[in-house]
Image 1 (spheres, helix red, strand yellow):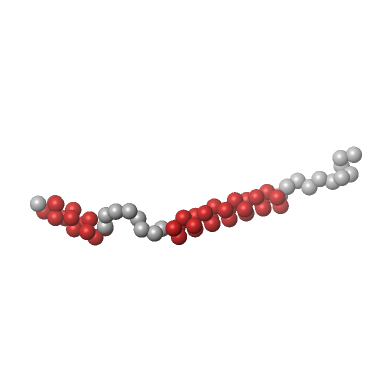
Image 2 (tube, one colour):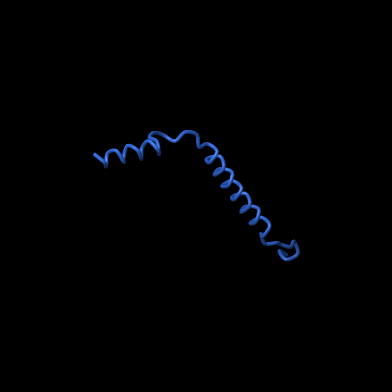
Length: 57
């Protein structure tokens, strides 16, 4: 009986059910992902090999 009471008390403190809200974390993760991909693409563009028109002849 004591174990059941402890379990009920724990569930009362934690709560039962679905997560409410949380969209801020989703939008933040999208922002971090797109920013990371954009910065990576920019770094690739900046580090691309430079070609001279004279060297192709």
